[in-house]
Figure (cartoon, rainbow, N blue to C red):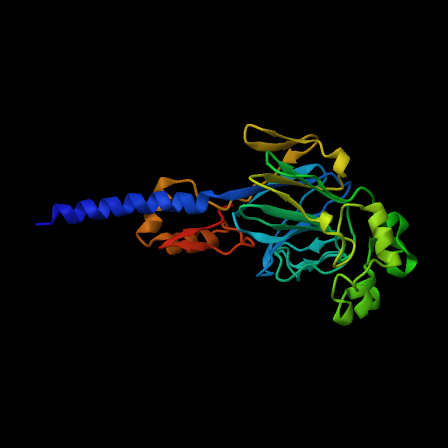
Length: 315
């Protein structure tokens, strides 16, 4: 006859497990990516500690959501001029991150990037250190603290120095950084130039800074370009300036005017049944079965384990 105390202990353990799983997986940040550009883009998302990540198409006027766990650190940017086949293989004119629509490496310069380090205090900035391909604005939503809007107010492609211009069919499609073009210690802040006292703005980075005054224009730029905020979700707006971000926070959701929703990329399961199945060791088998059916998209964050429970991205 089964010991009732043992049964009660097992039942209690299951409830404790479920509660801890929700606590571990429930702490997350939502990024709403909005394409205000006149062209289709292919956003790329990678983690700082693992450059393989995610990627998808975003047509003009479309928006999508991406959910990252608290503690996530990584980068979001736009790839342009991409041509992918039905299998998701291809290449891009700017910002490419491998040979598939899902990133298999870091983004290739030139590309404007939005960088994040999430935690109790979230750090974020828009960087031109790897060059410029599209304007980006980052707007924190419903947060506390500084929470300023980061971004670039202009289009560097329109006044890019000829020696930095990246062209396709005679058209300037991006503006490279001086480090990328000339590859010297002075421009790249390496060696003896790797300290704040010696890594100084160049004539090229000053042009970048004039167009984008609150973005990083070179590796050790003004630290005021790095902004902090707490308990916020974020809108990442492509081809939107800091003063033109028509996004608001309504009903615990970021809403941007002039955009239509596309697929959301969720990082946490919501079903108690899934939690119970995972707690009994069936999660990996379910995940494998779902991936075979194409229902699980690889995200820049690896599944993180809580005991034998996995917080998998469910698309």
